Length: 145
Image 1 (tube, rainbow, N blue to C red):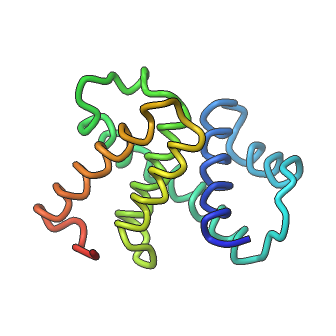
Image 2: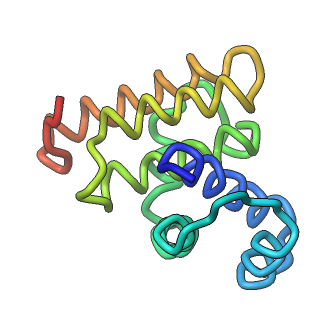
Image 3: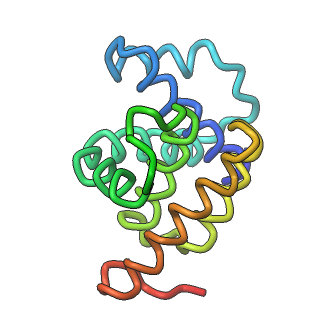
């Protein structure tokens, strides 16, 4: 499994955690038991768990960023898949030094196009583009283009 597939699995796990509301640890255990994740290496599992745990720990930082940048959309009206994709990407952009922001944004747009509705790719791209520009302006993100 490569990073792209691990990121896709992490997004799926984030969606499951948010959707099912049965407790994060239960969702993580169920995810790894029930999903037929092929060729899961230790590094892939580590990344997936770091994303799930990191997003959970930083949720009170991440969700307001989404809310602020989703002009015209109430947070509770954003489709769950789009929220999972946005949370993953924002966590990578702000809290993972090993992943360039532009890579995270491109991967997020691809995930949104693959799993979201017809406008999800453009919606996610718009929000993440705004966040990136603001982060560069205020110094919270580095320009890694």
